[in-house]
Amino acid sequence: MAEYWEVLDAKGNKTGRLHARGRPMAKGDYHLTVCVWIVNAKGQFLLSKRTANKSCPNMWECTGGSAVAGDDSLTTALKEVREELGLVLKPENGVLLKRLCVGPDVYREGGEWVDIWLFHQEAELESLVFEPKETCAAMWASREEIDRMVEEGSFATWNLFSSVEELF
Image 1: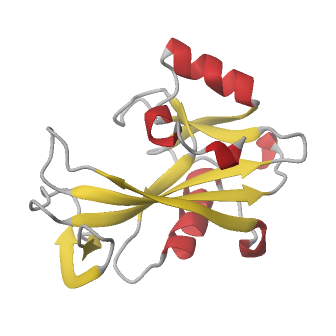
Image 2 (image 1 turned 135 degrees about the vertical axis):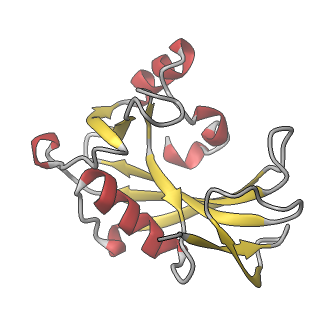
Image 3 (image 1 turned 180 degrees about the vertical axis):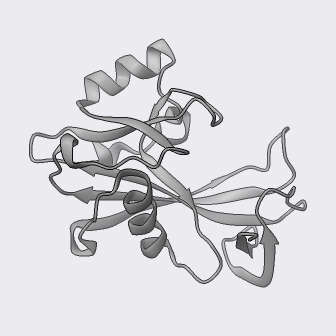
């Protein structure tokens, strides 16, 4: 069954149109994605490792994904973490930090509006359940560890978040 995204304009407003995932987006069209940072009481961030079959294979990242038609940003954040890590986040523990516009770029005509979420929540690594097509491991990492992963090229999405000082 096809997954559909709501098409947004260059200002992040819904256009009333839908887009089938996997097809190229038209110039000037955008869709909503989320990136979910989870921090524990020690100030460590929960990272997941992408599976070998995905783009940026075997790289670390914060959890995230695309909003399907009908889902808002918070619903998408909660759903992505539950699907990829088996972790049920408490909505009241989260705050929307920022919305960024990404693209279009030289590789695609369309772009994304990315909502950056921060949740304060504890989780035991042993209790996480990975989605085999998405994630294969998880770890708690300090800012210094994340910076090291960025430098060595093992962190998938750092360029998108380099300006998000609220995380740290």
